[in-house]
Image (cartoon, rainbow, N blue to C red; front, top):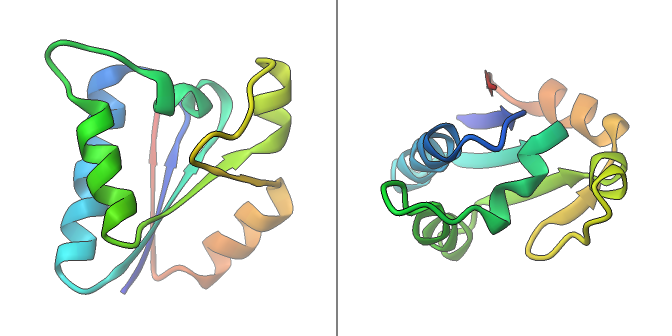
Length: 106
C-alpha cells in the first residue's frame, strides 16, 4: 500500500501521531509519504517534552519515509526545507493520485 499523510498543523501531538502512523506503515513494508502544508512545515523544529517529534521523525527518515514540504508555505514562514524536500501543490496532487490511502491531519 502507498500511504500519503497530509499534515496541516504544528501541534506536537498531531505531528507525533502522523509520524508514528508513517513509521507503522513502513514497518509493514508499505510506502509512506508525509506532506507538510501550512503550519505543518514547522514539524522539523517542534520541541516538546511529552511528544518526541524529532525522535519519530528520525526513525521515519531512516526507514525510507518520504517527507515533502510545501515550498510556498516554507517561504511564507521564511524557512528553509531542512530535512524535507521542497515540493509544490502539483506534486501533492500527484502524490494523492498515486496513493492507495490518504489521511489528512490538522
